[in-house]
Image 1: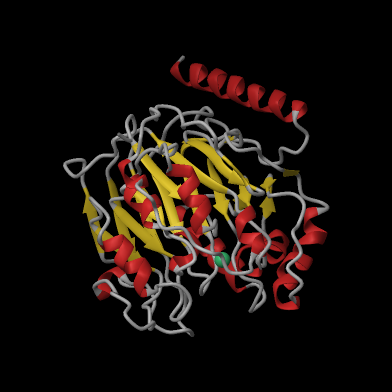
Image 2: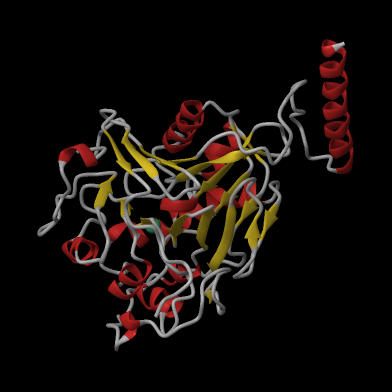
Length: 377
Ligand SMILES: [Zn+2]
């Protein structure tokens, strides 16, 4: 009798999946018999900061079962164009480490510089990519070195389902609340849910910058990812002045536990107004030995209220770099094998960070500072 009931439930689940498949023909993987229902939370949020040698690629594996019967995979940028296929292999290694199918359910192409979009074609060759979000029209930079990544993306863009989001739009990763806060030069104008509008003390004449001539960075898709009390900020390569607009005069983003240093930790982003307003507990820097990881970024991070640690994808050789302890640095040379940094985040706001190179882990328990989402006064 019990067996029969299980069998009937299994058939019911399969029936639901089959109906969903008919409604949405792009679905390929039907959940296995007895799979857990979509929406079921089955674990923490797992995040892999993948070493793309100075590019960007962050893989998030959802805490909940998605519509395909497994946890959703959400990739923020597929990394560098060259050497061909390297970063796709590193992304696939992270998928394997997480024990999920080799498939990307949602992928952001934050902007069209080769260190962010360049890996898209190689990745699309190897895995199914179900939905892409990008900024739409391209802003030419009249620099051949900057076009190659975008040109390699165009053929796959023509065959992938692509959405161009608006600020405030959600990316429907199961079990997470993912909000777009910047795209194609447009910025969020109203506070995120739960963030109360209030004057921000960090906005007392914040230093602004004359930006370098890389207008495509200003188009970056930025997101805030929430899982219960856990909050993560990723603005790709958004510019310094745009960062200030997101937190001044009102902090529209609220506070976060985890921040990926904007634009690799170079001096062109990572304004003190942004970092000190969002008050991350942990920062992860997607630098390489000489790109990013500059003295100014370290200074801003280390003076940020409540910041406990900076984890680095690479040791920085830049003058004045205040590198973290070696256990919090994943790679040391340009020809490294590409170790990742993994963050396991729980909905109580706690997290564990692990160095993929040597397995060193550090706990950030709930007892630490939890973000104040409701006020920026
Ligand atoms: Zn970049």
